[in-house]
Image (cartoon, rainbow, N blue to C red; front, side, top):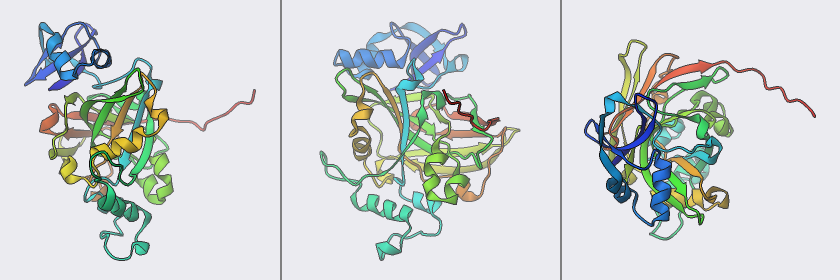
Length: 326
């Protein structure tokens, strides 16, 4: 099942089940968040509640404005986070000087040591905890862009490059239990030039906007996901294109292990909060020496997630931060 949050032509919010190019509108719930909270409190599956709540109204997907597939009315109650070095092959793009993880571990870079740890211990037996992945914080709900919205890069950034990824979408129940609603396609978007200067700049490079959606895939993630990542020039022509794969068959960690090492912290189990957690990628235009320019468009698409995610790159002016003493 694919769920889409959207605004109709009158600006009213709705949630609908996407089938081909048509949305079957859900009655009684105007947000995915409200639908999920009702499912949690009723101890009912999200897909079952959505199907049971569908009314008689339908609308063409082309006639609506898609929103991010999950949000919170207070952006501060959404955490956007992620894990890196989780996909087989991703180490080549992240650390081109070290392409092999065999041999003496002391000869490897820190990134390759982390990647090797994941390969060796990222898929523990069910119910057990494996090795910790690389983890980072991106921001709160204010940084999430829906499809067709711009990705605004600050003018101090040295680069703005896409990272086509799958994100897990979660709501924390009243009892502090994390509930996964499902998954969405995403563009995690990072400043790879800043990160390349020194891996300790990773935190700075990740404090950027991101794109998520437009559809929420309810249920379990297929073990193999095919997708395509593109950069379109200002005329809409394909400037760069590469296929990508995801899903656990193509990862060095299980989804459960990545989830454990995020939600093991009590901070991330506050009732009512929303979490958008990116699972990593193995495909970057930056690795092919592409520098995306303002006005160009990122496109991330995978058949499993329905319509493509498209975001145009823009630049916003910033000023030196001034702090005033009281």
